Amino acid sequence: MTDAAVVHEIPESNSFQSDTPIRFSFSGTGSEYFRIWIVNLLFSILTLGIYSAWAKVRRTRYFYGSTSVAGTSFEYHGNPVAILKGRIIAVLLIIIYNLAFEMSGVIGLLMVLLVMALTPWLIWKSLQFKLYNSSYRGIRFGFRGALKQIYWVYLALPILTMLSVFVLAPFTHQRVKKFQHQESRFGTSHFSFSGTVGSFYKAYLLVFAIWLAGVIAISIALGGSLFAIITADNMDREAAAAAGAAGVILFFGALYVWMFLLFPIFATLIQNLIWNNTQLEKHRFLSDMKWTRMTFITVTNIIGIICTLGLFLPFAQIRIMKYRIECMSMLPNGSLENFIAASQQQVSATGEGVADLLDFDLSL
Image 1 (cartoon, rainbow, N blue to C red):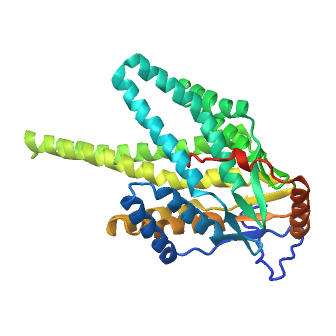
Image 2: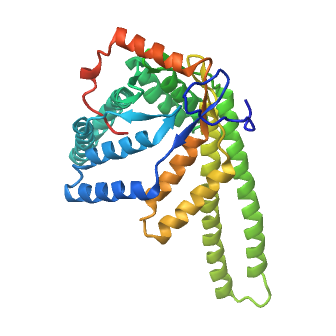
């Protein structure tokens, strides 16, 4: 399926034929979310951050409820008290971490090792909580990853990546996404992921090549202009020094802007790569994001946030979310209605026995 594939509108009957892509849709608006955002912000400040757990639930429920596929939206069932527990744990770890280094370097090092040992377990609990508390048509998602796999993916691989001076970053990224998707499920149906390590390296290398080309172009353009200015016959020493300093600032400023413009390209490549290689049993997902559109949204969002002193932030979040979600579609293999009905029967027969294990969320 190519980017030019025709994606049909959702019929009102919600009866879908095989090989008919079904678009995801997002109905959230900036004005609606602004009201949620401003209330969440004010209450979080007034309660010294305690309300932030309830704020997250309100925000997540809004985004879930605004996201739909096949005429039905998603639901979020997270308990704010469980989220508050996770945030208290995170704050305590930060406080203990800082106190440990004030006591002695050895204790501080031991605390670093303890945090490193706890982090994969906390991530595991968070993934379980997030997916279990997400549902579609009354069927909950879930996460089955084993703890030993968590430590390999979220501890061993990041350490190896740093030791390799980030040469292994694409490999680690692929392993993380493969683990997250393959260990996730919808009811009793499991997701799968077919993205290869090579495809991640190609994406990273493409972005690196674009970055390098931009750096070379900026260096030639600014370097040539600066050299011509400071070597001019009518330029005295002080003026040349000032021009040199301004040139250096301009050069690094241009590099910063160039790095920022690369983010939409990278985000586009990665989303398309991940979701075009994800399936739910035999039902495929598709993503056709365009980096030009993503760049336009990102740049105009930044301008809006700066010009409004941050008040445009909720509108910016809605614009990004709407575009990313509506670029996705699902390609069912057969009738989606039959699949949903079968999943509901399987869940009813199997039941969910893990709710008591999901008593907190780190809110990563």
